[in-house]
Image 1 (spheres, helix red, strand yellow):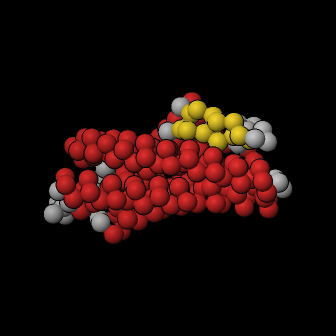
Image 2 (image 1 turned 60 degrees about the vertical axis):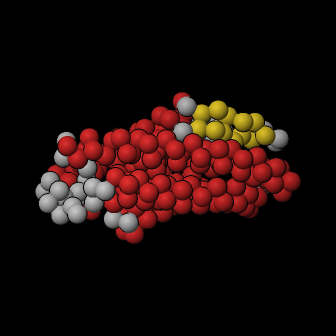
Length: 202
């Protein structure tokens, strides 16, 4: 795949995965009411964010998740005020997953299935571990200092959000790694796995 077609393929896949992040967050979520009229949720949007980072690398993968789920927030009155937080955190998740998978482990430079599975799992766990900590902590300070929410209400939301975020993280890692493992050989055969050169693969 030459540079132009590779770039076009990467942008196209970024757009598709952003759309999937939007769809799964919007339509495959269970909202959990918390005191003060706020909400947290169990959702599957992060699955396609992590998948995007494994397929496309940190920047484009993070961008897919950030754009898809930020648009979802902006279109939902419940989440519209936290859209900036969503964009930053989702981009960070993608950067972490993509950096570990592609800059540390170089998973596109091998066809060793065990190696690829191990590092896609490690990268996914690291990205979601960051989210388990960052989402409730950043959300707590965001609610207090930017949205002016009472401290007690923000603390309750952070605790409930931490539980939902942990559940989301576990399901995300399992599903995203499973999809990536199944999808990767198909994309290679179709010459659609970006930044993959069969001639250079060990």
